[in-house]
Image 1 (cartoon, rainbow, N blue to C red):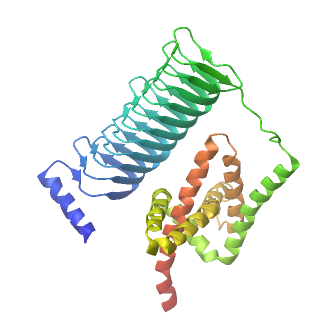
Image 2 (image 1 turned 90 degrees about the horizontal axis):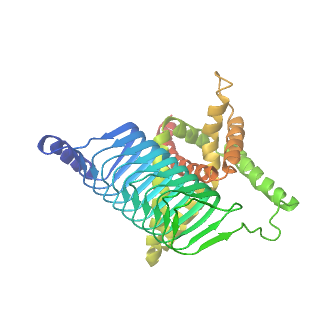
Image 3 (image 1 turned 180 degrees about the vertical axis):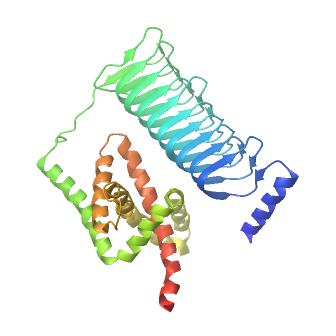
Length: 380
């Protein structure tokens, strides 16, 4: 009933007022376009390959896909996961981004948290509060009005950081136009390059990376690493042996509805812990809290296996164009590739998160589709 009302109001608005979306909406597909004269009166949830948003969004924006280009204002928060994220419009709330490439060209009204390969905040950009960025490369040409926390590869600052910084990086450069208001604390094997003209109002502290006692590569460390990695593959084989039909449905779900699976997984990754906390407040909700927590943990542990089969099949299809690909072979290829990618510095965190989202989405959407097949199977 609520969905019908929302559709009715949206259709009415198309003819009566400028185009607008009047209720929270989950959109899936290849492309989504929000025109300049369009208005989203509530939260907008997108699970699409490419999204171009030029209109105004009064609520939160949740995005899962390949590319996002935002030039219109967002009055709420942004949670986005994808390959390329370009935020060219102002955001009044916080931004949480998980991507390969992030560009912020306008203002962020609260905090910025980013896990990405490359991040750019060119001149004219601004973060009203703190910025916590984990990336391979970061360039800050704008202004961070709070504190900067960075962990990554290379950092270049030609802009301003208003409340000091805590940095761990391989290479650090403060350009001649850089201004650090407060203490400049960094951990690196190399001394930071501070060009003439750069301003640091507080103290500069250079810490060398500390190696914890016994941190080196040991025989036992390698052994337990191999045991953990082998257990993922053995678990996948057991899942195929015990639940072959279900695993086939999960594979088809990810293959045929990848963006929808990724979007549902991203939402579940955020919503399930929130629901568990809400239920925990109520005494009668404690059983639901335990159920949600158990499901969440099991799904995250098995996420690698749920993602590995469609990934492995896609790889093996490059060499075997025709005929079925054995599930065990797909599982092996997929798990090994995921394990290799997870070991890549900085990028591995993004792979880990993406795998978790796909795994959560696969088990939720795949279980629903499998349950839809049960009545027809019982009749036959």
